[in-house]
Length: 344
Ligand code: KG4
Ligand code: ZN
Image 1: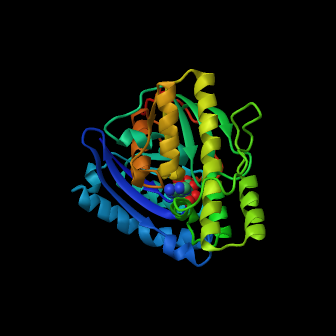
Image 2 (image 1 turned 90 degrees about the vertical axis):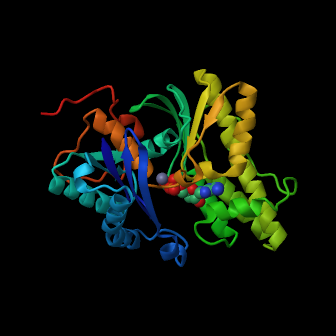
Image 3 (image 1 turned 180 degrees about the vertical axis):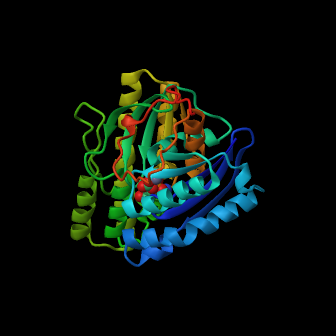
């Protein structure tokens, strides 16, 4: 069985073909970074228009590189939400229409379920149940995962998502969009001692996060200390250390609370090397194991959507004919894949 996956929820057009026997056959990614760089962030209307320009070409390229034709594709999965409504609608329109034209089922995939399952694209896969930490540009979620579609939300950010905090702080430091990876690079040259930022919400019980105060801490420090190269690096370091320490403290708490030994970390920020190092130490101490997607599948991509689509396809979770995007779509409202739908 082969699934074509389409991801257009934000500023990346990702198309992939996943086969349940052979694995990932091809994946194509077009990043709109250059398009949005001048504006310092994603401009939703420009994002939608660029997805319109790129999606069909990338579908053709993915089919060609997988040596496949439309007849080899069993279903089409597209990201239906959450995300930017215009960007989602492009993927939903193209995905639903292609499925109709080809006479195949269409599958609406939840973007964060895609991220959550991305480590399953690797050879060594985590086993259920596990704890998932999803840290992207739009979400910071701590989730207990019993099975695909069986999610209990244990904690989330009450303000900025982790990636969003990275990007906003990077902007304050004068770094170009997307700032997260650039800030991480700059932090390598920074001192761990010069500035110490707070670890928000760690002295309260619970698993929620709050990152917007760290951006303010950075702004106040820049105003007081200036913005020369070394100060910039020191602020980047203080910010990154605070985010990562906070995440590690919450992961430790969540592992203890749930008794789980397996941690899955996904979403753009899971590419962060310091985060991986710190969580590796934590897992070593707690006798557990952490699983990540490979770096290119931490950020948005079509492969995770094709993979998640395959799991939904096997459970018969198909979309009706209507074209529907879900810009807000809570992860814990998804159906379990054990609820199989028998199709006529
Ligand atoms: O998952 P993703 O591609 O998009 C969303 O679903 O939001 O995540 C993108 C986010 C951006 O905020 C980006 O700055 C951040 O992930 N990011 C990083 C790193 N690589 C990407 N943040 C910190 N360190 C990194 N190495
Ligand atoms: Zn994402």
